[in-house]
Length: 140
Image (cartoon, rainbow, N blue to C red; front, side, top):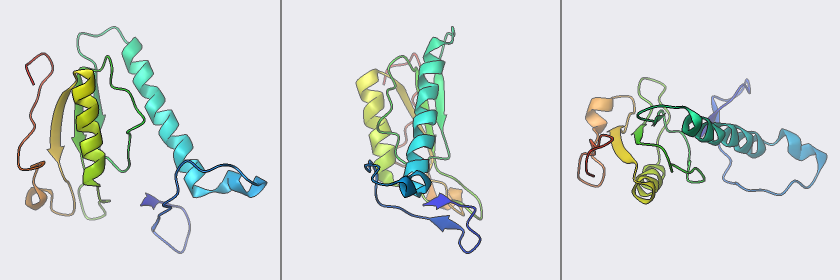
């Protein structure tokens, strides 16, 4: 789901990703806009890697879509959490699993903050039955 400025709805959903541009009308497609936005977000990872810092981290919250195309190489810590509050958007467990797997591949510490939702305390922060409180520089 994505927020929108369309006056007759609060959110849109487009199950298509990775489309091929077929006509000029495709330039206004919601999926294309979301793909362009995701590309800009993922480009920030390269910028973070260039920063001279003792610890480089990303906060992937509120997580409102898959970032599986990203690369966490050179990132020390990833914090993941869902949106919270009365208008919170949902978070797919698959997106969280993708990031956790990315962290394992790149040696990035994985911290799962919360599922979020209207009542974040009720939703909790267990992922597959455990709490992930990893910190950079400590064994995972």
